[in-house]
Length: 418
Ligand SMILES: Cc1ncc(COP(=O)(O)O)c(C=O)c1O
Image 1 (cartoon, rainbow, N blue to C red):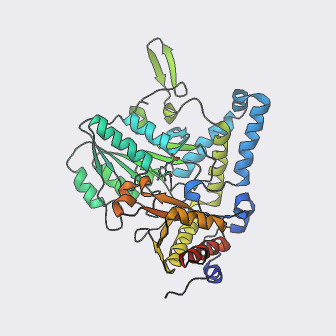
Image 2: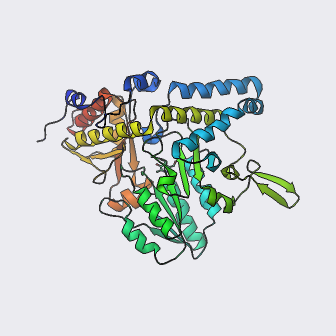
Image 3: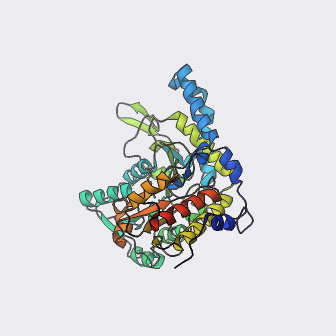
């Protein structure tokens, strides 16, 4: 029988500094994160805990709206809202006019895919890591408009097989390639830049769904070579719910019309004509939660201040330690593909449905989620895994949190808590 890790063992192995010497001040992060002191929250991949600064920004703006009215308050904070675009651009290596704000990643993906107007004779190549809502949109397009939808070939670690993708694209069929950088259902990290190099070489359009990677891993749109990048606010960025943004390369933006122009990004100039904003704001809608967007700005600034390379090193290290500790437990199987290098950790407890494991862990103050195959048929479904438990730490999770998770899983797996 494997020796079961104890709270002490996990605590002792938890370094204050990551291997490359970069450091995250976990104590300070916990001090500015109220929720981190109330439970062991391991759901950054769902919605991470926001900092007090983010919450204060939102509340302050709601108070301003209460006092002055929504339009008047927005006018007063126009400069701060504009700064959100600059912060988003800075974090992903874009320029300000290449950023559009949305209420979620799914809205961004839908708007941009609709703008690309895929039509019969075109092909969409989608990674097996594609998120459920985006996959359903792609399948609808294939079914209703006769687009050839192909799941990208993958290697033995379930990453897009770049050589096989190249062979596929070399037939010259105009293609949109869409890839989830990190999926919802495992710790996999797709080789985003290698895919970008191949897609560019064959003249395709590359959409990167970076919902699970922005704020978690370094994402530089220039290095990756994507045409469109979409992300959400509430996950590893720790922004309020109802926020998200997209990068649209300037070159693509100039030739890509929004499918449904809106008064936000278009000016109605005569009874039959309109002009579009030159920037990616042409894809936005007028209405939006200004308070939440300002909160997104605070979260982006806090992420940049903390340092993305430092955050990445810390999070990947936490994921690696968690996977190792879970793999040592009897009756527990880590479900991530071999070589997973992110802070999303998935596992299965023998004989226990993932949803039940989530309830049992919650009873112990440990918050994780269950991801069912219905959220990823091309991944979990294809692997024959009905569901996994997903734990996703953030920089406010200290060694005691990690120990609470591992001890809780151990207790459940050995039947002690039932
Ligand atoms: C990889 C991935 N893409 C897209 C989404 C959708 O994000 P949103 O809920 O902000 O639309 C998710 C949500 O979990 C996700 O994990």
